[in-house]
Length: 391
Image (tube, rainbow, N blue to C red):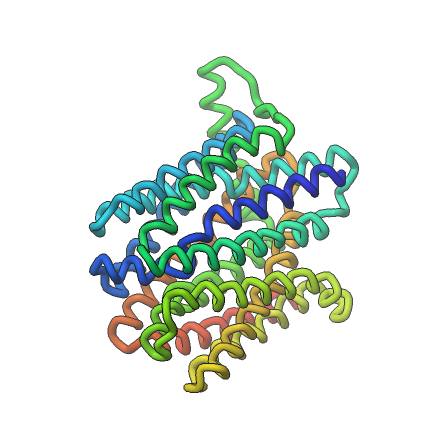
């Protein structure tokens, strides 16, 4: 069991590093290429839409042909997607890269979690899921290192961080062959029977997801959260640069500080839950920090107070992640876990995609900070619904 958790942690650490080199310069890179705020969000909205469309098919494939194989394919697709970004100059090229990236993300999303949870369950570690997902937050350390390196490199050329990600994902794809045990697809039949089996897995999993009230309640709330935080995710570097004249090379340090806050809060999530004594209320109250932080960013014009508010908002998200992942995995069975988790990811990505389009329209017409404020109000309504829904 320790080896499974350790190897999962190693993977998450290096995945966080590989995907984060461009995190703090992404929006600045696209603005430099001539894209508007709405166009930036449309690209990412298409990413979320592609996630929505690919989640169930790739989850079924993972359940059918093997989760490890699906994860490794996803890593190579990520590498290809970022290579396109490195070479591109136009909206439609970035759009193609995002669609390939969405396919990569869906190949990994449900498959990775299922691969390690099932391996843990086979070893008798059914009660260690919270520990497993706290370990996963070590990804934040990889992200912290990656954004600092990426912002430093980006001050010379905003395209170079993408090539760092290409190289890192290629290496991680090779390393993953040794980190995870080989798993076999659950169904082995004739070719004609396989198509029927794949269809049945998808239908059963989607029906299971909608029928499971506990699962649908938390996933619906996660979709609202994803909708609400999109303007913060997308626009913070532009805001720091335009409103406070923060140089590009310092963007990585701001992002690194937020990652440290998220990581620290995630490690305290178990204690947070014990103190509150109710898992649902622990999830609810974690988002009070997120909302207070967003409102602080809206009202404070001083850079230091703005940064403090920004980090408070991140702490709520850090508390939420392990609680949410543990809650979701205890709400489903092992049989078609990858497909059900893909169903869960599909709904949250749909929320994020709608949030990107909505916040892009608000930001282009009324300003970035107003888009933050409006989405914070939406999050208040979301957590209120979640609290009363689950009484």
